[in-house]
Amino acid sequence: MAFAYEEEEYGGVVVLVGEKRGAYPFSNSLLVRGTDATMVVDPSLSLVDAAPHADVVLVSHAHEDHVAGLGSYDVPVHIHEADLAGLRSREVMVGAIDLAPADIGEADRMFRDEFHVRDRPDATAFTDGAVFDLGGRTVTVVHLPGHTAGHSGFLIEPDGFLFVADIDLTGFGPYYGDVGSSLEDFEESMRRCRDIDARWYGTSHQKGVIDGGAEFRERLDGFAGVVERRDAALLALLDEPLTLAQIAERRLVYRPHVEGAHVDPVERRTARQHVDRLMRAGLVAEVEAGRFRAT
Image 1 (cartoon, helix red, strand yellow):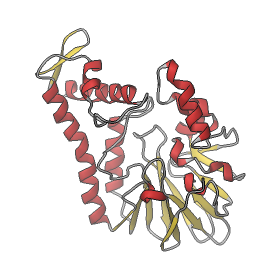
Image 2 (spheres, helix red, strand yellow; image 1 turned 60 degrees about the vertical axis):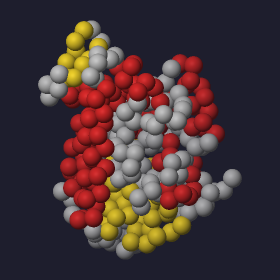
Image 3 (cartoon, helix red, strand yellow; image 1 turned 120 degrees about the vertical axis):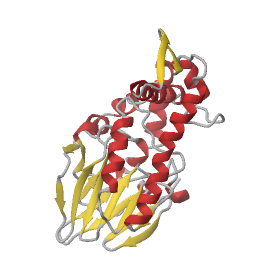
Image 4 (spheres, helix red, strand yellow; image 1 turned 30 degrees about the vertical axis):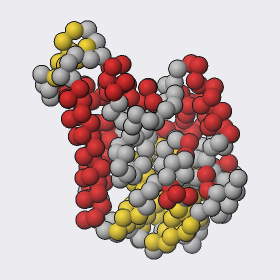
């Protein structure tokens, strides 16, 4: 099945907007042209059958929805060093979810058949601050860890376009539920984004492109507020002693109707990070081995 995308131009940056405004399983890709080379950022499902020409590909992080169209490109592909193993090996990418052994095979099948994820052993690493010069237009790596360890944005000049990838400003809020994710790093990355002045801020999913720093920072504050609401929800739950498994059952991240093998491990890792954070603040205590209660 072929998926369509729409083109939106912001200076010399073309956003390839995926179906449903880039809502998962789709996402938004970028096409960036210079006088010497053309770059694609995050080739999505929409690029599987309609891939524009590119001389080089950048990947913001090793998640299936950001690499689904990568098989269309036999060109150099680059990703942050902390996510390199996940791009080189589908097994490693699937392993980042830390599923129960019985569920790994189905997840691997989904990544392979529905997202077209293939090993890219040729992928090479970049680090924070790396600059890709396309001729009259540069793309600078801005490491924004937390969502994954290597999650990165890209500042495109002279257009003043900052691609913030999965700091996506959606109502779902920040996701830091993978094995290599970090709530603390995610919050620091959001602070780093606040300090970067750009004309446009591009996201990977439904919110698309935000025009101007004031609007972006306002929306970023709302996005970050989801973390505080999860803290508050957890404190309310911990009126009685609970284990991490019991907290996960009550869900801080997903709504009750959401099902899937990924839900429990993501909820557990998220709960663990929030419990640790609230314990450091003196708001939660371990009242007996593996059971936590609000103080």
